[in-house]
Structures are given as C-alpha cells and as structure tokens.
Amino acid sequence: MKLHYAQNSRAVRVAWLLEELGLDYEIEKYSLGAAEMRSPEFAALHPLGRVPVLEDGDVTMFESGAIIQYLLARYGDGRLVPEVSSSDFPQYLQWFHYAEGMIMPPVNIIVVETILLPPERRNEVNVKRATKLLTNMLATLDRHMEGREFLAGDLSGADIITGHACVISGGLGVDFGQFKNLSAYVERLRSRPALIKAMSL
Image 1 (cartoon, rainbow, N blue to C red):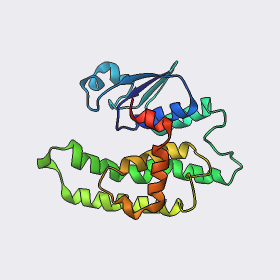
Image 2: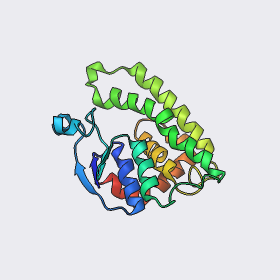
Image 3: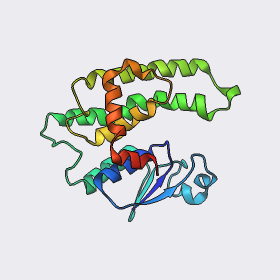
Image 4: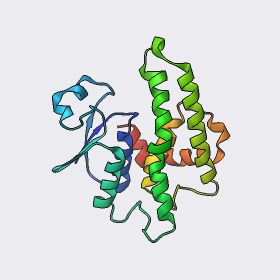
C-alpha cells in the first residue's frame, strides 16, 4: 500500500488513519505544488495533480473521505466505526461529512487568500467573510463537544476527517479561545501518537 503525501494537506488524514489501524504502508512524499505533481505520470493517479492518492494493489483512490471509508471498510475490522444499530451511528455519519460540507470550504478560501495568492491579488473581504463563516461552523462543533470526548462515542472516522479539519482551522486566524470544548478536543487529538506521526512524515 502506498500513500502519496504532502504535509499540511488532506493526506495527513489518511496517514493518521493508517497509523491508528496499524497498517503497513509506503510513503511517496511531495511538497505542495511540486512540479512532479503536474507530470503526466502523476495525472494518471490524480487528474487534478493533488494529494492524497492511495494505491492499494489494483485500487487507486484520490478523494480523502472516500479513502477513509475504504480503509475502514476493508481493513478496519469494525474499528473506528459505530455499529449501525448504535445511537452513535447517525452522529458518526453527520460529523464525518461535516468537514468537507461545512468547515473546509471557508478554510480553502482563507488558505488561497492568505497563503497561495501573491499579496497583490489577495482580497481582504473574502478573508473576513470566510473567517466569519468558519467561526460559525466551529461554534456549532464547540456546542456539540460539550461533555463529549469525541464526535460520536469513541474515536471514529468522523474524528479523523472533521477532527483534522479542526486542527487545520486552528492556524488560520480563528480565535479558538472562545471555543473551550473544541480547544480541548483539538488538544486531545494532537496528543495522539498516530496524529503526531502523520503530521511529521
């Protein structure tokens, strides 16, 4: 199994899950925006020239959420997914998809406007609007985390996806001091050896 990976990308989620599951994998590491990610060879793996890409035998996948679901279904042996009959299961599904549906759209805008674009092309109005939206999305999570350790019962794939989105959000100018529950949650995640390893590959 091979993971095409770059730091500070959604590939960290996949590496985190691989570490949590104790699976053997090989890393092909890139810098974001590296020329080799624009090559015809890489385009055969990911048509948009991005990471992650997971190669597992004759399977090649490049959507991080789908990769997480694939790994849990094929290699999880019931780990990190609540039983379908459990009251945690609907919450698991909701928070699994919350990252890409709610958190990452404003995150993407902030990253583009404050990091990727040259200063003369940045739009402060877009940054302020996206930061306000991201703050609202995180406030919803903060309320949900009252009295909870993880998003849906025990640690699950929802934490791998949406928890990682929260970790990313912490470095984008949002005042996490207003989110007591979410701040504690992010610190719990950051202390996990599997995430520490995944972020430092």
